[in-house]
Length: 115
Image (cartoon, rainbow, N blue to C red; front, side):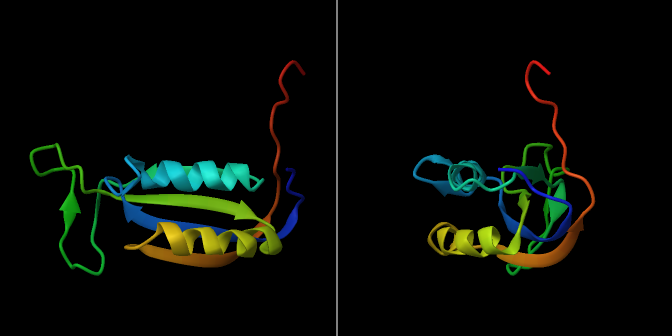
């Protein structure tokens, strides 16, 4: 679905990279559900260091092999579509942080296949 310039919401879900949903990465399940629901787009960002409610610092520097690093999924779309997606997160995110920010879309463009 297209996203026009103007007001929108940014949904950010902070989880751990090793969180799972039925044997697949949780961030993958979130992205696939957002796609299935027709949201404008989703991106996953892997962190190299962070801490949350547990107050433990997770870092990629410890043995350079940490699988408990922070991860965020960012989705931007119009408010109605974002809010309609939130019940999916109630089921999926049992540990983590979910936030909403008002944003202004300045440009949303993609290169069409073959054109």
